[in-house]
Amino acid sequence: MSFDKLARLDLNLLVCLHILLDECSVTNAAHRLHLSQSAVSKSLNRLREQFGDPLFTRTAYGIQPTQYALELAPQLDTLLFNFERLIAPKNFIPATSQRHFKMAVVENPNPLFLPKFLGDIFSEAPNIILDNQNWDSDTFERLRKGGLDFGITGKELHPQDAMLTLMPPKDIHCYELCQDTQSCLVRKDHPSLKQIWDEDNYLRQRHIQVRSLNNDRWLLDYKLAEKGLTRDIAIYVPDFNNAANLCTHTDFILTAPTHFSRNIATHLDLIILPLPTPLPPMAYTLFWHQNKDKDQGHNWMRQIIIRRCKGLSANK
Image 1: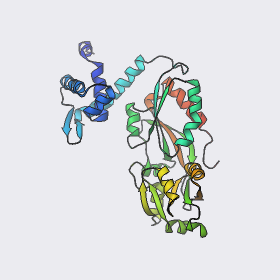
Image 2: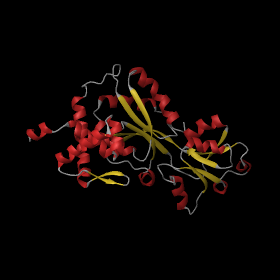
Image 3: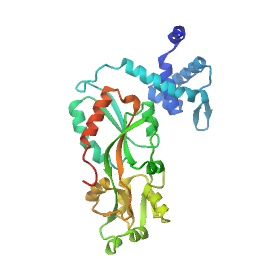
Image 4: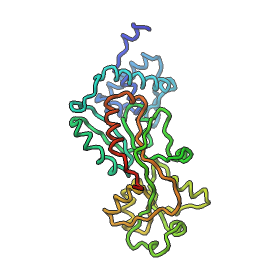
């Protein structure tokens, strides 16, 4: 081990490199580090000298890491995580902790889960901060890089189905919180209610589709395609709440998780119908990175979430 080289290494530079790799933007990195762009640019120049590599190249879309920088990224993640553990308090004491936890939750179960565990969390740890964010296509990567502590979203139970929709990386651990099914939402006096509610009736209607993680197709669409069938999508929307509101003003049908449907139907005076096409249940799942397994604070919050979310399956 070269202690001379280690003595000359500035940890702040490594933190700066970690953020630059995450953001691929000097401006965004400066914002996260609470520094000026000039200060970040100077740090980048020192990093280039330290590693003997450009590390980033400029493009029309910002800065892009070199191959050498990409190879450094996982080693840097591990190094900074281990250093954080080294200087962290040995014991996590909820009553006095001021820790900042970050959690990404997919939109539709947010009203289901958060009220279940927030009371216990803030009763035991009144001074912590819980930063609740939207689940997006970068969530697994943010979990891996330490930018998030937890994620909650739906996951198909069968591995082959999960391959079509959501397959977490191997270093992401998970726990099934509860299961859910799919239901249909329509306005009162919808024309389809005057007919037998079956798959033919369902497919004759026009539909609202919520675009999930920039994906226009759900597992339902893949299952229908296996039978040579398809839904007539009238409109794509970015979230379930807007989709449900559209149901109140149109004859379109929204297919949505049953937990969400039960909650929103009461507020918007909508009718819930069963999904006539057989579809396996899915599971709302808690995700975290394996590096957090021995983190006392993380374990404390994880156990509260798991304990308080038992028994929430839609068929109960």
